[in-house]
Image (cartoon, rainbow, N blue to C red; front, side, top):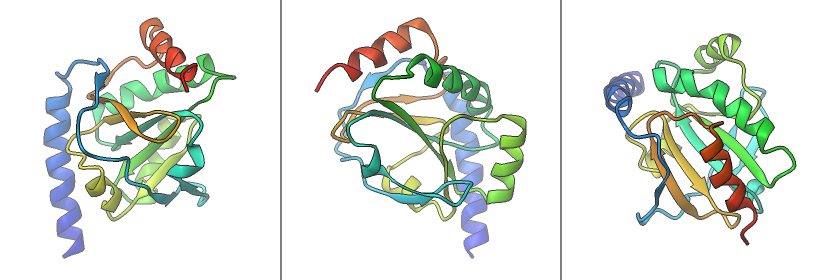
Length: 172
């Protein structure tokens, strides 16, 4: 039963991801009622990460999948963003959307990253955050509250995005 649930979830996310290709790559102020549900997940190296560990930083939380074309295209720009934000209180956490570790590892062989890749193998965190498309991006303030969202891909290392994120790091 769990296999069918994950297969159905993957199919739905693939459909929504294709719709996200046409989404604007602009940060939108968050007006929802979701209060950054806490999570504790392990990364591909089996290291445990808790969302609260990142408080005090502006955090980009991205939900993604290996079959998501925009995810594949934007991950190198996220690597560049990390370098451009070096020395600032800024972190990236990515959460894979219910795929097995072998699939994620294979993807990371092709598209290496410089930030944690967490595994949400049963999709529970995905459900808590009410994610319906890949990539789904959330920008958290230093207290861990969601302040911006962005559905679909973007060039994270663009001058405009770096300026916006840098400005956020200087706020309390």
